Length: 111
Length: 115
Image (cartoon, rainbow over all chains, first blue to last red):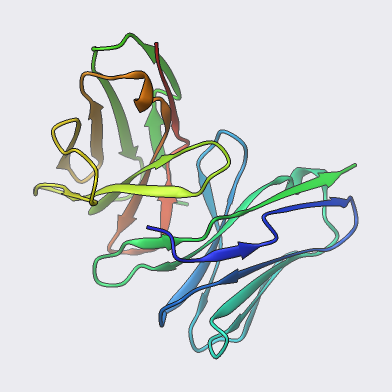
């Protein structure tokens, strides 16, 4: 089931630029996760931010969470061609452990 | 880190035949396995959730007799697409959740083409 929405749906930037993707959700959450998917491959967990956190960093990734607006953003700084992929946010993982997925943002980083 | 090995990565089968997809957790015990289907340029659609040693819980609209899931051990779960039809062609991905592993680990996916 999908309840998250990401925007933009597609993003094309030049290498070295920053990429920002946004995710909105509808219900209260314990945490929100971001995943990356290369074309035709499985998903890779990037970062998890808990509901009591506002910002989290991991290398060139920065995630923010605004629970009052039910939204999160993923910022990739100094992008590289290898960052080209689809990025998904997911919430859930509660007692039934099911994740609720956003629709994804397709990022193209042009060399 | 945790690894889930999914096989095959690609399979082409004839209509009416069955195809089995395997997911193995290599270095952790996968107490819960999720099976997803993904259409081109779309998000993941959860098909079913399985817990080791018990019957899978299927999402609404997913035919349990068509998509057989077995999670007989803590390291192996299988999805069998029975009597496959061209409309079953899709990308299937498994994801494992361990009690001791906070994150979710995904297999690399299986591209199924039914001809």
